[in-house]
Length: 193
Ligand code: ADP
Image 1 (cartoon, protein in one colour):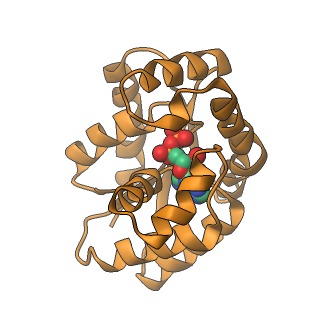
Image 2 (tube, rainbow, N blue to C red):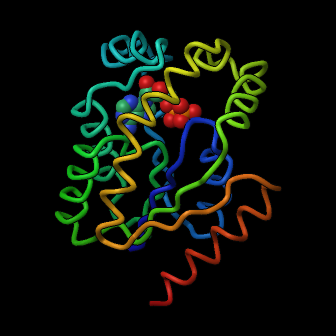
């Protein structure tokens, strides 16, 4: 198995690049944001709890997302590997993920960290808000909250995996194809090890 974390702030292009990576490498895409939005659409109790936090740009509790990921791993036996997108977002989530993967005799192969300037993130998210139907993309205060949540709670995830020499920083500005080519060459390097 080969498992990847695609890491970066909101608006850094994780969703776009995830689609290309899973198609190229046959991985299962696990986006906690997408799973949460599906729970909201289905009107589940979990969705209702998550919605009020997501609408403010605040992270949902660790145990909620860790539970979702744990079920998703169990529901995909025989997967070639997983691409984690928007997860883990805290150190506690990172530790929980490593434990879940170890139980399945696997681990994270590489953390690909997309680097994008704050101005570019704001621009992209406001642009996405025009068509995405995501209320958290339409308001500058909510977007700022998400960037602050990222800086205060999520950047530690990169530090955590740096200790295991698993993080590669990739410039997330440029064409979608150029960024994808850089990401895939980093994946290929680790795959051939
Ligand atoms: P983006 O990265 O563009 O902010 P996501 O779709 O990944 O979008 O996440 C949207 C919202 O869902 C976040 O602001 C947060 O409230 C919640 N969320 C998603 N993933 C997690 C996670 N791993 N831990 C906690 N909250 C999460």
